[in-house]
Picture 1 (spheres, rainbow, N blue to C red):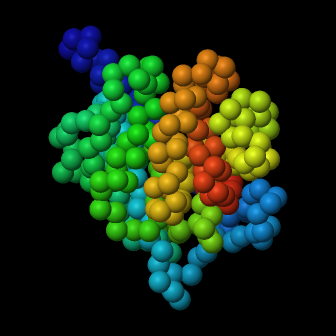
Picture 2: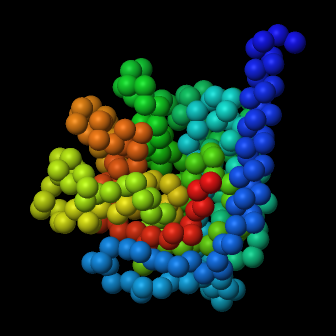
Length: 279
C-alpha cells in the first residue's frame, strides 16, 4: 500500500471514530425535555421560560422547516454531509418533528456523484480570490443563490452545517416572527462595539440589539432569511476586506456578519442553550 493510500485509510478511520464518539456522547448526554430558554435581548417581550413544544403538532398544523447545509466538494466535507443526512432521515418522521425537506447547497459550482444520494442544489462559488482564503465566505453567497432560485416548499429554514449530528426529532422553535438560535459564548457584541459600529450604526439601536449568535443552528422564517441573506453576504465581504475587523473576528467573522444582518433587518432571536451540544 502506498503512502497516499495509507494516509487516506487512516484519515477515514480517524474520521469515523470521531463521528462515532460524538454520536455516543450526544445521544447519552442528559438533554432536558424542556429547553431552558430563552436568554434573549431584554428589549424583547418574551416569556423567561419557553418549554420545548412537545405535543403541539398533535393539535395544530405543523410548521415545517427546510434543513439546509452548505458544503464544498472536499472528501472530508462530503463525508460529513453523508453522515448528517443519515441522521436527518432517521429523525425526520419522529415524534413532534417539524422537519421538512433537506438540501445540501454545494458551492463548488459543479455536480458530484452524491447528488442522487443527497438532495443537492449547485451554487456558484465566489469569483477567484474574493474569499481571500476564507472559504466560509461562500456560505452566505450560496444561500443567496439557493433562496433566489430554488423552489422551497416550507415557510421556515433551519440553517445547519455538515458536522452537525441530529440526535432527536426537532420541532420548529421559532415563534412570533423571532428566529431560534444557539447562543455562542465567544460572540461578544459588547466587547467589539467599536468594530461593529462600522456595520451597525448607533441610529440602529444599542449594540445589544445584535444577538450573540452565528448563522447556524438557526431556524428562521423563509421570507426573513430572503431579506437577511444579501446583507449577510455583503457585510461578510466588507468585514473581510477591513483589516481591523478581520483581525478582531478571525474565523468567526462570518458568524458576526449574520448576527449583524439579522439585527439590521429587525429579526430578533430566541436563544436556546440546549439547541446544540458542542463536544
